[in-house]
Image (cartoon, rainbow, N blue to C red):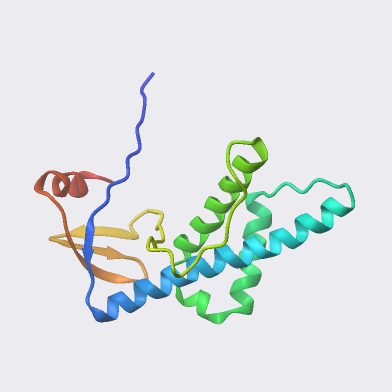
Length: 158
């Protein structure tokens, strides 16, 4: 039996002013979705708890909330969709860990937190790596910097 190991690789990106604005918009979208879904879920949790009925979050419910958010807030449609889907996957994982007793309850994301981020899922050819540039779907090309060792890994990863 073959063991497959998936690894993530962090690189330093060097965006220009326009790209920085696009990245900040996607970071803001991710934070907005997290906070909004968490708020709605808190309300649902209180309602169901008061009626002695368990409420277990799942991907389908969280995805339905994301679809409603996209209809309600048009700026979310302009953002990168896989990063938005990653948010509710992360939130679902956080809820699952909480209900198993492995983690504390999720907190709202703050703009003041020094760690601002969003993740993009690689689907097919939506992420392309060329000479010192990464092309991300809906975002465009971003220059990056990393060591030669990691550059080889980036080019060989599929």
